[in-house]
Image (cartoon, rainbow over all chains, first blue to last red; front, side, top):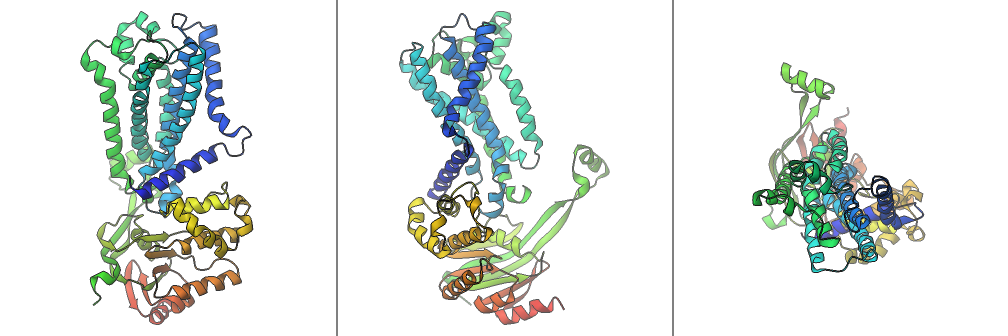
Length: 264
Length: 247
């Protein structure tokens, strides 16, 4: 990335962040409070009333990291897809590489994730989790999730410029996706009913990342895709999916972005 | 014939058209109907037809023409916002475009924050903006307001701030679209003074409807009509030609 693009990315991200909590009393604290409240609700409903995850040690933090990563994914894709529309004014008035807009929107989500991870780590330590070397793998898993989100944002974002339906379709789709990933329920419940269903769920890179992060960070008793999927080729499918989505996203964006200023 | 290194911008055989969707082209039902009936759903409008010209370094060029003659499209192509259908553009040096003043201005940010944001849009780092900052603020005469949000500025103040950034941001080529008339009489006079001093120093391209400005500032002018250059030469002659279009 050249100097000019870096300056622009920097300023756009800073502005995004500054404006998001503009005019609220708690300000940046909302970046932490919101996911904690979300987690509180899920915890009450699923851990306390429905008694999911009784067999998983430290289920609250296990649930917390799942929701934090999921929130990151939804924020990253939603903001990324909408960012081009939000910044349409800029695109019509000045020439610059358009992907900087998507990069800046997704970087804002990444910063929020970093803040949330600090909270997760504090809670984990309080819950009795001990530091282990596998923690060092977590950044790479997050990078994988980020690349997937970035790819989706590039692909759907560029389609959204012409067909605003995309943004609405994605919002519905993401609701469905939420239930197709073992976030609020443990994967073992699914595996208990049907091995095939558990296999299918774990082909999803988001599910793979969430389970792997839980494994590395919280408890080695997490059922990961690596364990569930027996075939080596199947184990690699999540990674292949990320690569495909990212490549398609970059190619489509490259082709379409030339005409954003005219079409938006 | 000017030597190659004296040319700031060179435009050759530039053409551009837009597909304008007709009102009968939206929605799924229409899209299917149009495909079945073989209707295209848009009309093609040629905005620029085979335009060629050169701009010399240090030249102050005015582009004039009626509404819809293709002036703004031409500027947007020069600024690399639009992609040409056909033709070549060569730009020699850095180009600072002001298609509109205050690009990226945000009402919720303070005047100071907006200066840095606007600067970033034009490719200036914080360190570079630090150097220009005092100059910009004093030219705009807005020193007491820099830590207030932009939404609390009067519209005249906003334009003054934006304009000051525009003329302080030094690139090799400055492009201005219809932005000469800003501020009150005193500020106007200050801007005029500034433009007079620019003459011969910097390459400037302006689009304007004000023939007074063309005669006063420009070394050369181009008259566009229907996407073609119909006159290219001395500002006085071009301004007269332009006024004749309306008689």
